[in-house]
Amino acid sequence: MIKVRVGADARAAKGWLGAHRWLLLRRLSQLGIVALFLAGPWFGLWLVKGNLASSLTLGVLPLTDPYVALQLLLAGHAPRTTLLLGAAIVLVFYLLVGGRSYCAWVCPLNPVTDAAAWLRRRFGIRTSSRLSRDTRFWLLAMTLVVALVSGSIAWELVNPVSLTQRALIFGGLAAWAVVFAVFAFDLFVVQHGWCGHLCPVGAFYSLPGRLSVLRVVAVQRSACNDCADCYAVCPEFTIIKPALKAVDGAGPVIQSSQCTNCGRCIDVCSKDVFGFGTRWSREDAAALHRRAAAEAG
Image (cartoon, rainbow, N blue to C red):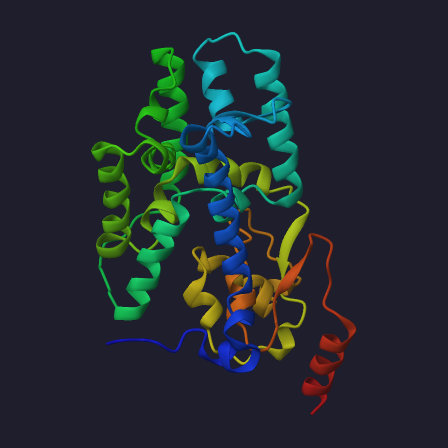
């Protein structure tokens, strides 16, 4: 069964651009980051040197993936000051904007897994395979143990995120094979299989996400018409209900550290229920008034 309705109401209410605003911004972010890394080897314009694991921007700003830095420390490597500084800068940034914002706004593998998710919805692909979403945390622990025992960051040799960037910049059949394998796994085996169930990178970034300031907020949840489009597009759909339906008296803020701040729930909602806010956001006065009127009527 082909399902084409997801987001149709939003497109009718806000127009195509309005219903894809955050998605387009994410793609621009992802493409822009890849372009910065491509500019050096392709055009000799070395604005950024390095890769997503560790880079130097304009010869001044060090940025280091704190997950990679942790693996290096466990592997027994003596860290340079720039590496620790770069990791601290990145960690503070994601404490502000949400750790798994990395997954939606930076990760070069995200468009691949998004494409698989779109095709599953478009063609109604259903599979019976299941994985626990906690599996990614077990894999995260395993990669850290491997670093400790082996004295190397062996995970980065097979990390699909790193291999995707490597494939885009340098090519290579093996790297592209891993990218295709992730796409096929998400499309035919487990829905949101890689990002939602297995990726230790996302698991790591969800940890600072527990304290992040920027949040998706259902500030006008009383306007919800139960179309369920937000559930359909969310890669972590189980996180929406508490904020949207006030489960156990929950406030309108999506508190889960698994939220990627992708903004797709904002895009596809024709009633503008969702928006970006902070962890201290509350429902707006108009929404509260509508709810009180509905309950009184």
